[in-house]
Length: 82
Image (tube, rainbow, N blue to C red; front, side, top):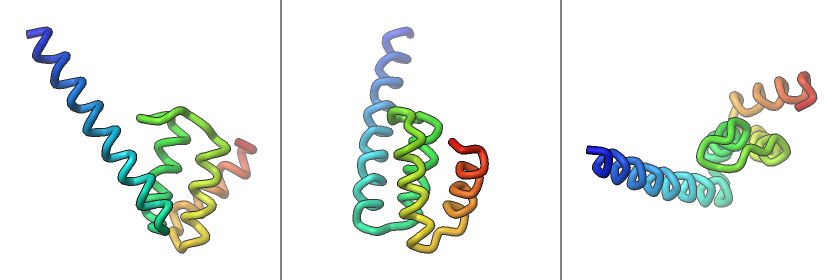
């Protein structure tokens, strides 16, 4: 049972890593929603290293490209000086 759980966890981590990389590539290609998602993941340290500077950069790009929710996150980060 433990081996099965471990295998499922490892497969899930691998699948998440692929999804994160796909999202990162979509952001680099100019997809605002993907940049917002990368900002969320990076700010929280979910699947990637936690880095507020990078998160701010992702939110900034997404906001510039029209994602209003990313603009709100930028406001919060700037207000809290994160």
